[in-house]
Length: 246
Image: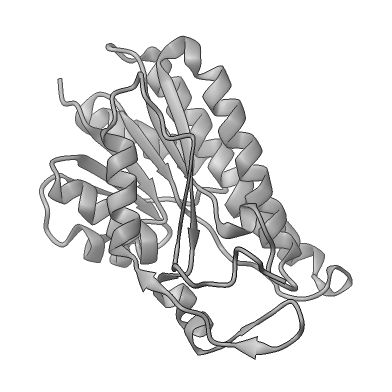
């Protein structure tokens, strides 16, 4: 039976694409999940070990189909990289539209829960039992940016999900850890490099770092034996305004 089977959500761009390709390049079989089939095909880039599965992580049926596809192709799932997310609406709490709040929670939090739910069920049932879940938190799981209540709230909640999964998974050989990333250089953070609003109202450019270092960190976490776990890892641009933010 095939081992080293991963599911990566948000695999069509940014961090998800780089992490998925790094896993593929190091011998993993990877189910690529995301909304856009074309983008997922670009990530796969013709690799035989990649399985393209267009997925809406906020839809329980779509997530169930994703994990069924991975099991159907390879018989098991050893790793979930819970990466899909959106920044959502920006503004004061009184300015955030309810629909924008709900959409952010649906993708960032409910989506992560649905994927973890399917992963845990799969990992409990397979033989040999067990696996690993790596949740993509954020610096915002610790400290918010101005005007980011929806995003920040979901990322704080991811920390709670990580802890619960880590605790509840112990009896089944399921490890769960979280990587909190600050200013990795992707299309999503291109604006930050030009200028980001600070706590005092100023707009200042912030440093970024090569996203490949995120992939290296994920590979380290994923490569540990299941009796060892990186519970939380924070990877940031060295001089970004995080320590001492505000």
